[in-house]
Image 1 (tube, rainbow, N blue to C red):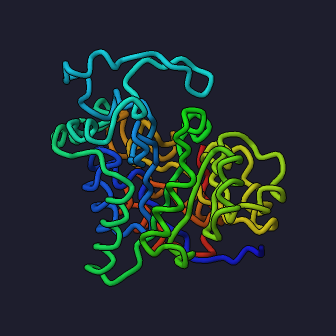
Image 2: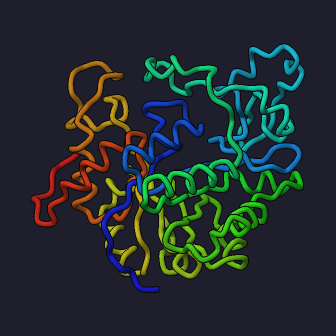
Length: 317
């Protein structure tokens, strides 16, 4: 397919998790109201095959499961992506059991202000995320995109809980089959994307933590790549090469705190203080990226709205 430039998208990473505990309906709702074009639910499975929004299947750091004595015996150690992980895992809980848990702030040391919301919000299902997006569309009168990710798809497939078919089925059941401009489906695993490419014409995005071997090959099944910011800093020419291969580029992840910013964009010495995240956006927008995954959607909206195509590129190091 040919690359067609558009206004850069603002993608609410796990919602607006700079302001609310991640992957909660409240986080997604705030992202929408701060102007995000898309909200991004990471999807994992429960034991009874329901897709829920969590960044990983280990819920130790994002829920209050440790405070529930009845689930103490569920704590276990598993091999996840080649590493041993000890915790509580979604595939060992039914949806009804997960409903008894509440979300907590994943980064309390960086975002202590968000801990005020600990214990208030439930773990949402994918269906509930879609219901929220549809309701907000009606309320605001503008399209709300949804950008789901299959998390650890090989792990779940090995358990008999494959993510791809229920994801596509849920989208189609809710009338998203023909909304190709408002649904993007992402994964780090090429095999998951290839599987879904045989199920749907909805647009797919290959996430990247390491340099891609062959962008042309990726373009046979994907609409875009989603590289880590560090990949583009090391190889800014990747954007032009991706565009030449017909791929859009959606870069991740932007966060406003100094701890996540390059030295030239930090303000003050505290890692938890807000820095000049606009400075970082400008660098990547000047490279020509097509989308920004951000924990603070309002800041990305401001940067995109202020975009000047002939700005002199800034140096970020």
